[in-house]
Image (cartoon, rainbow, N blue to C red; front, top):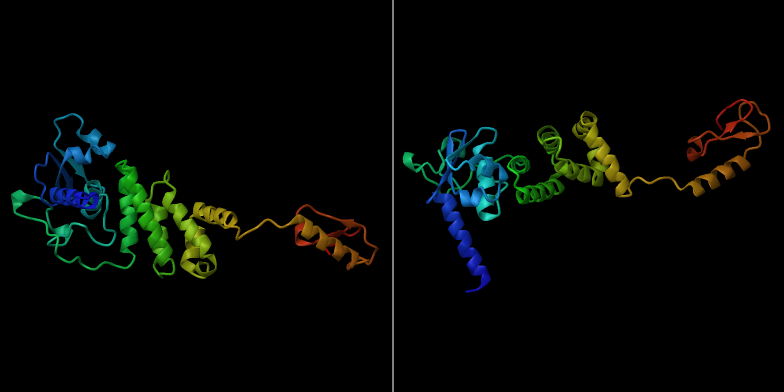
Length: 279
């Protein structure tokens, strides 16, 4: 038996455990939905859930801040090392918000064959953002990395979408201030497509509203060498040529006694020392 088939069989076992909840020893309650899971899988990968269950007597964790959709993606990663950004690896017989998941006592069940209800085009980005926030909260670093990768792919592919500004706003308003990874992804995308995106008034509004994003974009423009410091040698050479071509001040007509003001010479400007007129 080769390694590929062994890995596939193991993934099938893990998928079955997630799907059916057999041998569960832990429940995650999320907005009326019950996930029946396994401490050996969940608590060994998340210090949050480990701390919640560490007293040895608690058998359930109540989660109110995240949606069942997000929790399913978190659990999919913990069991299968992957999640679906635009659907669910484990498909549901009904919309997830209407079905108690894995609650076998109530007779409900999961299905792997039922098609997902279609979602808005930018929903995949929102899903990745929510997974990233959850992974940060539950201290699942590999999941944060995967969510960042998926979000980056989406942003680079869909930055021309008319709804891209909504994704930018979601990142800026929802991601905790201590975590800059997704903001840096947004800044990188905007900087590399700045000539197109700057035409979008909604993107301009985002930059005006979130000064830290504007600063990140400027930093990216400089690091990507789209904005460069002027070559002072070239500037001074052009300035000398301009001075040599002018004998008198355009305002007072006196012979030039040139005066240079800090910063102005970079724009090839100089002043008459007599009347202070810029020439």
